Length: 149
Image 1 (cartoon, rainbow, N blue to C red):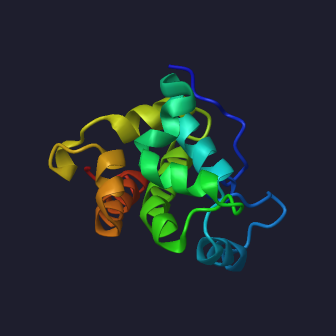
Image 2: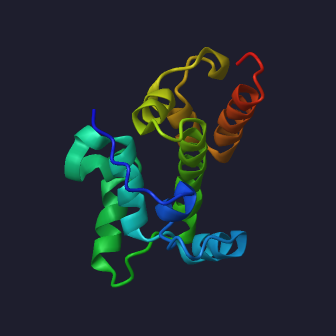
Image 3: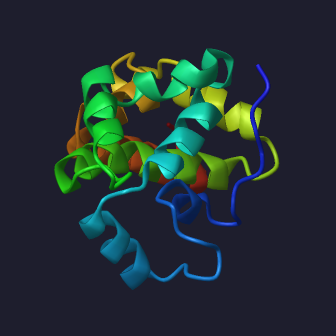
């Protein structure tokens, strides 16, 4: 597995399609309200699923959603779709923070089932819901604090 590393200093901004110079919490909130650009989600999908090639985005978004977006001129996800994708962005960015110089390790951690999460991978739990992403973030916080995970 070869993970791409051309991601901004704080990857959450890169994945929502914000340039590095515009990395304020307000810019992030505005971008989520407008809808995440398709390019940002593609970057996220290619990072998480490097072996999937051009079909990587289908691991995060349904094919029908992608087809709807292609028919529109606006290459952004709806706010509802953005709200479903954002938990994955959040946990991915946190994993990259835990493994800053080891993107492959961050991806493996996200994809590997974890006993604290009921044997579900952090990525799958984040894809299920915002509450699932919160569970993953709590796990990451325990790891950062040096507590048993």
